[in-house]
Amino acid sequence: MSSGPPPFQDADHGSALESLSPTAIALLNALSHLDPDCITEDILLVATDDTGPSSFPHSNSGLHKAIAELTAAILIRRNATTGEIWIDCLVQNAARKRLRHDVLALQHSFDLAVHLLSRRRPFVAIGVVGRAHKVGRWTDGLQRSTPGFVESVDFALLLTEAGWYQYERGNVTEADPVLSLAETICESSSSDSRKVLSFIHGTRHALAATANDAGACLTHAQARVELDEALQRDTGIINAELASAYNDLGSAMARNKRYDEAMPLLEKSKALREALPGWKPYDNFSPVYHMGLVCRLQGYPAEASEHLLKALHDREAALGPMDKESRR
Image (cartoon, rainbow, N blue to C red; front, side, top):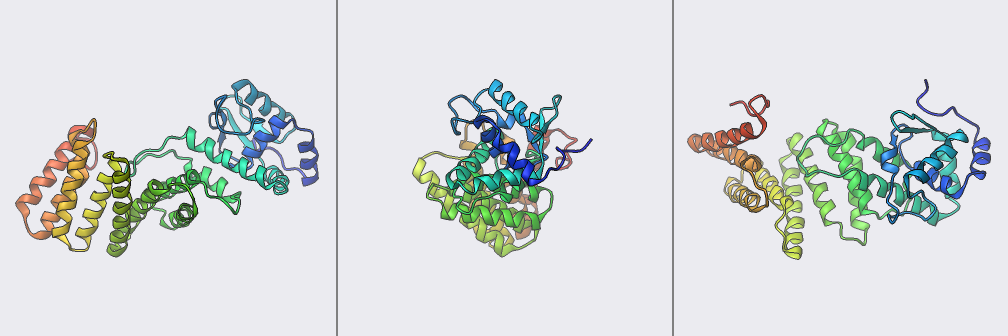
């Protein structure tokens, strides 16, 4: 079985599109921005009062009716068992070609696609492995159809999420372009994009650490701390991002052999974590572990052993002795 609908001539696509209802067209416009082989019904479901054009289906029944209409027109294919939808790239191109004649409709459909992905796929804190395995594919589809005037911070966040996904898998060359685009969008946006910029610098710090680039580590860690400190000053809320940023900067200082500056930053990271609601000893793993490394690099083996064993003990207590990094 093929992974999508059979190819058609562009003229046939245009004829099929002309006969669609406004609801089916609105759905097709959103689908035209997504990965053609990576669409599931759950990301298309929106609440009745949710963002989106009035013509977009705002109920399960409305969505299924629009899907049935597109399926009957042989513009998409749907797996009834899994709810997966495939759309041929030629169909996407035909839909976007029509949208180019209406800049506002193009922007709305693109923003809707970003919104659907953003609200249906919650993000996790930086440093946590296990992001949704299709995030790179989703963002791939969006990038191919990006209008030239995008200022969406939500899209920048999706791009950064994709960059972190690539970092987790060691794909440094794949991560850099999406992070660069995300940063460009944030810097040109009129919205407050500091949280996303912090995420970008945190991801770039991690990439630089993998490449053993001490200078880049320090540059991105300092930028992240400045952003997160400003956010905390403005909101008055202690947040995990700032604690993580201090840990990044502390480890970056250590990489640059600035050990006396590293330890206070790691202590601040530890103290902030302990002030957060629901704190658990394992939450201190990263700063305590880095304290151990700093002590070892300074030639204090007893203190290094104390910190490292504490970090590993708390990790083992939280994740179990079979965790590969918990064994002492």
